[in-house]
Image (cartoon, rainbow, N blue to C red):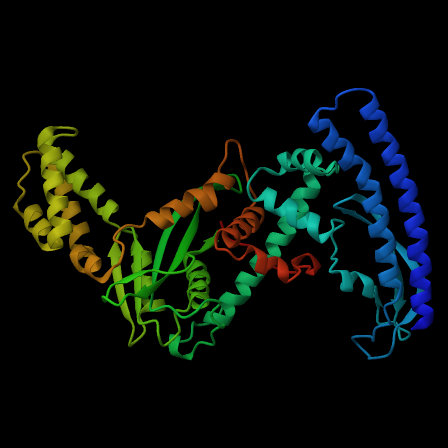
Length: 471
């Protein structure tokens, strides 16, 4: 211990002298700038940043080398034998906060030939990427907000570090695949293997919730189109919003909404969404109410009941009121003419009654219609079927009395803000795997899980054989 302390003190003393020399040179640059005349503040900041970068780089390189040199030889994961040091200082290039580092760290091999290890990389939280963890975090945060090829310009302007767009894409898509692998693992834990029969809900192994148990959940589902694999395909979006019961009785939103996005089949997406509901607390004995909100798509209601219709829990299906309003408007325009005062007055009256009394009055009004033209009769017949099918999902006065929302605005907003604002900009074309990686990162950030994700050191994980999503 005394010998190691002496070695560290000696190396730090040498580092101190080198840093002092670097700082003297930096000081002379500042002095010359001041003597030349007034210095614009932006120039001053740029000079200070440029002058401190080599100093920071030297400190990081030296202290990291000292830290790595003191690590003991690890044991082989295969045979348990102590690994043998074969190199005292194998170099590794890394791009980080202060520029390009050359890190020297010891290299070990198994005497029985089972492989090699660099314990310093593990201790520092380094993975296969040549970006430092802090720079990878920054690049990922920028990339979920802007196109890959715009990130290098921002990084260069802020840190005076050169990084190319291909590196940005490769690093961020790799990290997104780590996040996506975690999503798939959670789905398997919550619902069983994807290629096997789904176990009854009461028999499912479930991951522990990540939030305090809610009294209920609002689950909203929608979709949005993204250009992938040469054509437009639907990405499915889900939102889980915890509810807490008030002293007066109704429930109110409580806690952060949780978002998920899937470029996959409906069955696979429901597995993903159910895993998010589990993490939000749907399997807790306290959670006795699930409100499922969606548009008129049959798959939402059929599969939703299979996942959330557990005995002892109230499942409330809610047809998004604004989708219902669009269909009322379709009837009005077909019968009285698009944009006419009569169509507007009839539609507005029906919607007011629908909100106040529920579906029966609207169904009676539809039954009483006798359009004069064949096209109008076709529309009315079709819409009668639509509203009859959704009759039990339009009891809006009851939903409001329970404190539940009647619109899917949050998930429709998520389709725009979580998905399309980043993945559907002009000219963007994606492979499904890349789109899923970025969408998954963006969803976990919007769900307030960004810091927790990086705390797992995802840059150290290499994802192998992640199933390809179906567009």
